Image 1 (tube, helix red, strand yellow):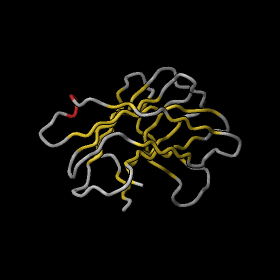
Image 2 (cartoon, one colour):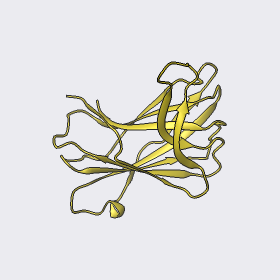
Image 3 (spheres, rainbow, N blue to C red):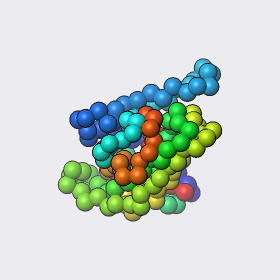
Image 4 (cartoon, rainbow, N blue to C red):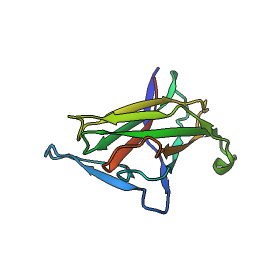
Length: 162
């Protein structure tokens, strides 16, 4: 049985240079619910920057493949954003800051003409195999190498099983 989505219980911008920030994306559609809250990343990223995330696991883990689903929004008609995920499962009575994180395959999201104000999606399969009531620790690193997105982006991370 598929499961999720589960949002993060904690999101810490591990950056002191203003590259990362809590953000509200203001959609241009004009309806009565045109804003999304998420993880902000500056335009024209000039150095790698990491959001530190915690996802509490449910008491019973769904069947299927564990994935981090990322939705991203930007008022952009061109550009590429690069992100690398590192993850670890942490049980109660263990240290989340001492857990060894496993690096996953880097994801690229590309904006083109007509993509402004539309969700871009990436699903990253995670190596971790959490048990019920564990905490999933994730480092979400936005990579400056080959980053060409010249607009502020807002990212919405969730955990799913497919």
